[in-house]
Image (cartoon, rainbow, N blue to C red; front, side):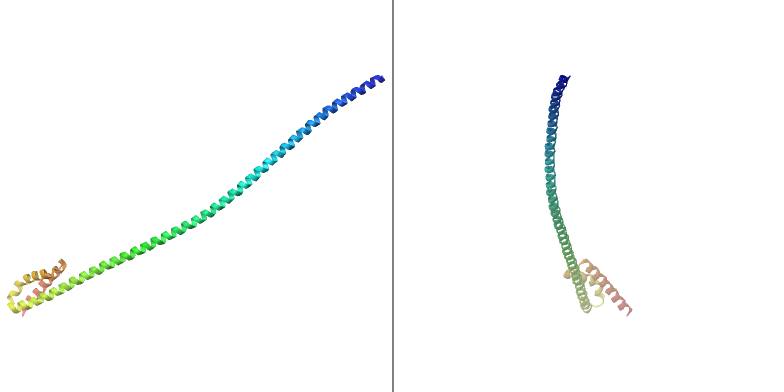
Length: 190
């Protein structure tokens, strides 16, 4: 029995050594796996940190570009507003100049019309004065009877001499007829 006890101890030692070898191998595999996990975690963590840094750098660059773009947009907007204000002021000046020129043209035309009317009025007055002078001479030379017969001839002669316009002619004829009628009624009533 003693021999059997020794044999079991040797088997126990072999089994124990075998178990220790298996456990050592298993521990070694676990350590290798843990080391692989740790290295993988370090690689992933380093990669993630690189991504975070790259994203942060990209965000800072984008922010700087956006800030520059906003500054450029604000500057362009300011320039656009200034250009619009200048264009509006130029259009206003042009309109005011145009209005001033139009008013000057209207005033010149009105002045020309007034001058023309004044010339026509003076011509008519001159014509009336000439007609009255002709009438007085005719009365002196021919007497009362010839006055009415020669009036149309004298009217035609005066119009030819003075070249009066249509309005002046109509006024002159109306005045001559009125004077003629007034003269006849005064003479017949006397």
